[in-house]
Image (cartoon, rainbow, N blue to C red; front, side):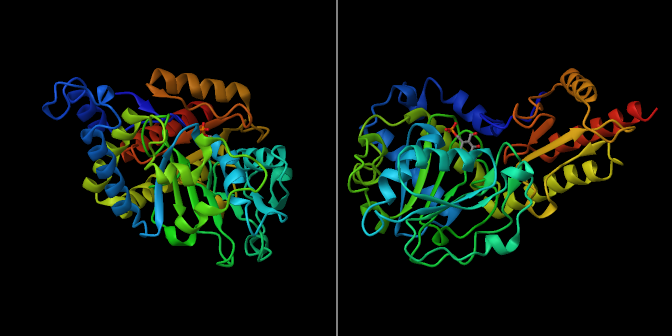
Amino acid sequence: TVWNYSAGPAIMPKPVLQKAAAELVNWNNTAMSVMELSHRSPEFEQILATTEHNLRTLLAIPHNYRVLWMQGGATSQFSALVYNLFGHPHEHVAADYLVTGAWSAKAVQEANRLGVKTNVVLDTTASNHTGSIDPTTIHYTPAPNAAYVYYCDNETVHGVEFPAVLANVPASVPLVCDMSSNILSRTFDVSKFGLIFAGAQKNIGPAGATLVLIRDDLLDRKHPTLVCPVMMDYALCAKNNSMYNTPPTYAIYVSGLVFEWLLQQGGIPAMEKRNKEKAETLYTAIDSSNGLFVCPVAKTYRSRMNVPFRVCDPTTGQPSNDLEKRFLNGAQERRMLQLKGHRSVGGIRASLYNAMPIEGVNVLVDYMREFAATVNK
Ligand code: PLP
């Protein structure tokens, strides 16, 4: 067995891969692969409709929300928001951004690059994005005419996750959220958001599809002077049922298989329970290692999906590149792969997405204990 802790593209549920493999060259007795179906065919339209239906069931998406399949990854949404949500009556005001890690930092950078006004209401850069978040900042009240309030629910690189939906945002201000790395991992109330987006390659399916959930009254807020590229136009995408051009058909189909698998597992509440148990198991191992393993993130904001930690020299208490190298080499020998932290953070990062079974966490924790015994000798 290989254990894959990649932050993304990430581990897929094995039954999904097996089903996709079984259907690869002959889907539904068509003697064709889904890859070979026209996106305009009734067969693919059925796949798209079933996929959307199952996603709506999983997330209890209200009727006044549209499900859009877009392209360009979550990164393209950093720009799409600006083109689509700065229109009347918000063209001369700012959007508020909370910067809690690398991805929200990139989002505000892109909005600034496109020339709109942004208001960074929280920025944890000075503390290296370790979740040192003043709760009073989180409960700030945005200007009632802000174009939107933006945050990233789970910062994949830094392992910082909000414990709950951002509160106190007035209904007049759309709440916009990047859920690329934690969507479908826990229950949440879609109706609290104006727009949610996620790249597929962690909890949804193969890279190449980008999911957008948007409240339908926001489809009509295009920036008055910035001309929106057709591929980023939410209204156009909605009007064309995500098929203005050729959508990433195979990625959508496999995402649909993931949604079926999630329903079979008991839906999002079952995932949430399992994810909580997995994260608790790993954080407990880190926190009870007498300082050998250290997670820098403040406890309230620790991610259940991406767990970053350092391996420290017991004599100095400081992160040790040598020990981390040894740890990673030993992990590799045990077929525990892709545990290296993001280059901007260093250390180790274990990603525990929905498809990671508890056994994958247990083998990691066993290895950490084994490793500790060799260091403490
Ligand atoms: N936002 C978050 C939270 C991410 O984890 C990532 C990618 O890992 C992105 C945005 C960028 O996604 P993409 O590579 O699909 O553009």
